[in-house]
Image (tube, rainbow, N blue to C red; front, side, top):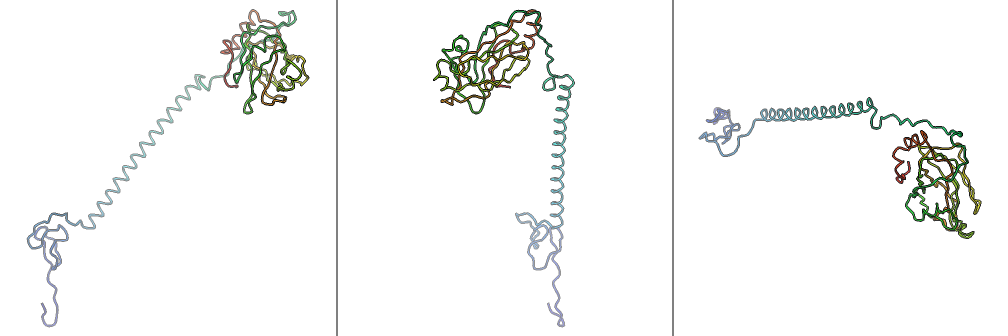
Length: 285
């Protein structure tokens, strides 16, 4: 309405439902959504004031932050619990000297007494022979003849091993080898021959030996001192190439020494540990 040239605005319309002042041209309350004429609420949610929405958002963020802190605290406690358990178990093993913290086994000290074994070293009986990787013809190593030979395929990724289990614990003084296939000169040239070997005895005694390519002759390996053992592992580390470079041959092996007696025998069994019951044909240590 216009009076004396001055335009006056219509007064705000109070909402009959909640009393909120609304623009005179609005039909619905901006606060509760009710009809500004009848006060009836329409079937949809009222508009939430901006301040209220901000408060709700802050509250939700606070709840999320609190939940994350709770999860973090529980994870920290779980990690601490695991660490304390591991520390307790490892500490117990260290104190008890068990598992990987066990002290190295103390092997009984042994020394060869020539007065107890005055005779010359004799041929020692071998109860069992095996090879790694498995191959055929091990019996040819012990038949006492050069007419037959044991053969193995040479493995470029690893060595070839023979395991000779003695019939009784013994002092080993010498190892006699018929290197290569000695059934004939041609057979000798065709096959590979041992060039370097490693003797592994009880008590993890290891003796490296370099052999010669001397043809069809016996090679005698004299140990620096007699060694007490229950078996002999011969690891073929390096070979002389033959015409057929994919194999290696041995015609015979002979162990010379003295059968252990008395306390030497008992010491040998203790030093052998789990080797005494048979050949150790697992992976080389």
